[in-house]
Length: 371
Ligand SMILES: *Cc1c(COP(=O)(O)O)cnc(C)c1O
Image (cartoon, rainbow, N blue to C red; front, side, top):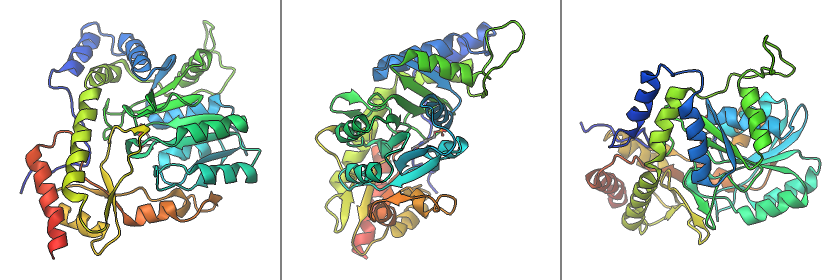
């Protein structure tokens, strides 16, 4: 049996950049608290995406949580967010005792449908914040979304956990809203083994997020707290991995694009296959190559055939309004996200795959159309 081919797994730099930064932390015994790697990783990531400031945190989920707090979202407040996403987008809304309202996707972007979002604004004009997600590294329709948030004077948070390296009309995703969130979880385009980053042009709010993330310790000699605190900071060792990974981000995007284009060329002509949308204004990072099926071959057929050859693949996210825990909340839209879930499949998109691996995947999938 071949070595397993993964959907998306950690890929350290060939040059060993990560180890150099980790070694520096070890050599100086400065593995904690915080330290140079954390400070530099924040600066380097902020420059990379074009944001004024950044706070390195222990997870993307923690970054969303602090973004909601920075936006003043609290008990009973309504927050709009896409239904088609990973649960980590929504959980922090619940941590704040706020109320999610789920918004459908459109086929043009797979992300929040601006029409459904407008409908939501009309129905819930008291909404406190909007979270958009750039799913699988495809950017949402930001011009329309930003315009709506401005018109209704509502804070915009971008969950860019899957879209580091993705641009919308030349501007990096995560920098359109008041706050942007990135994740360095193990399967993301670059990883620190686990971690996240909150970015914003509002340096004062980012400083506040750092304060909350270190247990809200007031500037006093004794331990004094006037606010609720969290233990959400990134360690100096983990930040060292991040600095090294950031150096190969462009390479990883290039490889992900190669994988997507290979699949599209080889599979795009098969009956019923449609690849995730690429628009003129969207420069994706192609985190996961995904497609939908409308013919005889179903997503489960592809997943089973690949699994029997020790190759990982996965369905599209199951919408939040269909989840047992979240189905009691409001949903605005039709059945676009449900159909994407029913008909979609994410193909193995690991940047360590060789062209031989890609050939194998494509041959296995093509075989299903010959049956
Ligand atoms: C991975 C992910 C997150 C959470 O990031 P963590 O660093 O794992 O906490 C949030 N939202 C989306 C869309 C994600 O894919």
